[in-house]
Length: 500
Image (cartoon, rainbow, N blue to C red):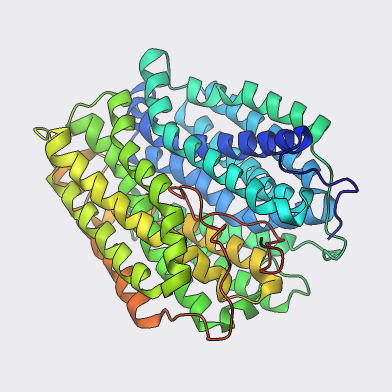
């Protein structure tokens, strides 16, 4: 990897500017991912949109982000991380503008898909810039600052979204990205050094990326539209067939590609494969439940958007406080215990959400569920990410983390498409509080069972790293709240020799 000729120090003015650019850029994407859920009921009322349209507002973004995330990292390695980071920021801002002025749900959904493309260019580059720009001794401090400040953005997101919706309009949750993006680009152009990987493959896996979009898109369309159009309708069957065919073709192309964005050989590690299965279960449960919860709170319990956003704060606060400690414990005792118990604790929190209805109080019903759920996630996320990185070859650590992040986002994407139908929530139920409450209870119990299954899988499959492999001297990997997805590592990850 080509380092900048004058790598900044963490305590220097130049170093602070680099951190500011990456924190603002990644924070913008993280903020947008969390605030949209709070806006869904308001969007539905303004656009007179059905429940499936609200699903598409979420999945449109998640679809392109999950499918193109690994390609975005590869583009940065080849063409320059700063360049791709800036392009992603500008793309994200332009798509945000289109979201903010969207005249109807169809335009908003299309704009959200474009936002996901920008996020796929922007998100991998933010951390890769830190890892490539700073001197090795300063990278843990820089990453820690990026992680902590990024966690604050994630935590503030639902609250800020609720405030903007209540004070003015849901459109502001998108339009606020424009001044932030302008600041990010100005700082990046002036202060962020350009780096690239001289060993990056000369060919990009564009066919693989296209097939990932086709496969996930077809599958998502079929799962969302099936309950509306009928599972036996030609359009539903064609979409599901296209999705399955696209995903099978994706695997075939990746197996034969000289430079695949998803090197299938990495799955020869049973530990790596098992950790990603656990990721799919836990983050699928998380994504599905957090999609439905703001709707339940606002449509049924009559929370304002601001109150609904504030209701989620305990989860992110607990993760901010405890995630790094959970990572340190996993380094000492191995990840199996936490990865087994954490999802079960989260499952209990999800099951407690079944008590939330029109007469529920925040302190008696919502807060206990959020607190237990937060403790479960804080117990799980750091050991899970550490296991993914430890079970992959050192030269593939960045790719391994990117895969894990994409798996988590794909899990949430599929959960948002599948869970409402599995719980019996129809487009008519969305406007009927009693019917929606019945479906919500079934949905959170399904999510709880899925999450607990993830813990059981971890208990059976996860093992401590082999003896003789020295653990990191500090768990620098797990210092932020990963509510949306696991921490995404750049293509270059600190090695143990580089750690202080």
